[in-house]
Image (cartoon, rainbow, N blue to C red; front, side):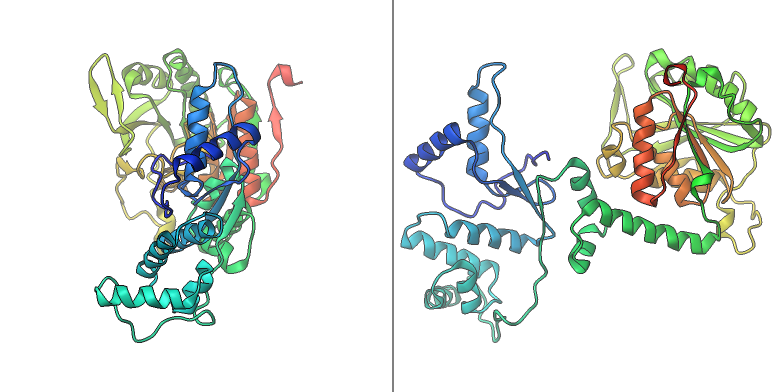
Length: 448
């Protein structure tokens, strides 16, 4: 897990003196970091600021090629800001050698943080005498630093939720913790795995959507194919696809591959079917030439990407949107969100051409693939350009965003990629989110 750059927020203890720092530095040199660094779900340190700083200092002094000092990480997720500060203060009071005055200052800070707790409750939390807490409370009330409360919460009063604790979480576990509802569900139901909890929530979401459409997508409706698009996908029948939705490689050396994409789309799409392809803006004009070699150019869509500015150094232009080329096979079918109307009939609705993506980093698809796009945006593409039960083709599946968007919205899907690892990521993601095992069909000669 990568630690957050904004540290020191929960550093409640006074700084170590020189003698203490030297002793800790020598201990880490000799024995390593004995206690795990405790962080919250965002990677902000709750306990271990000094150990972390010393490790960074010692690692900077190492000669090139020398093994760096490492440390374990424990995540405490689901704590409020007050609970994080309280935990840090409580844990350190039991092991730091503080003067009486320093201990009183810690009690005062805790009273300011949680004045609603009784003297005995705070004393029990900090392992100090309740009379000492009472003395400090009186002083703070007299100076107006804390309110004079008529009631306080005792140790047997308010029931407090347990924090979610993970030891050395993986990147996937850390990402799952940030998924909406995961921490709350783990706390409420006592679950221990954030990945499985996220999967349960996704299944509940899927079930709710199935109730609306009446169409259930099963394993037989999904294909994962290891193949090269330059071979034109002979395993996919003619006119069997309703929408081609993809995000082809942006690099200059892959421009010609859009001609193959155009040829495949023209063959496999039904009449009126659409091809949506996100493209790199630097080569947009050249890509348009290739992608319209077999398909009809219809319109250009844009996905706004706040916080993810890209720069064209040759043109000295900074842009915050992703172009999506919309091509069609003949006159396009306007299927936009027909499943949301009462009788499923076209109300002559209009396609929008601008889609909004959350700020960069708010999409958990980056955890599966470094170029992963926002799932919500791709779900909107799926709903706007196809109908439930229809079939979507994704020729460059990457981390599986299109696949997941299709399954969530009751579309059959065929995902292809020349990179076997990308298909395996997509395969695992389907297993995690939908509890379906989809085999990978291989049409690459080296695999046979």
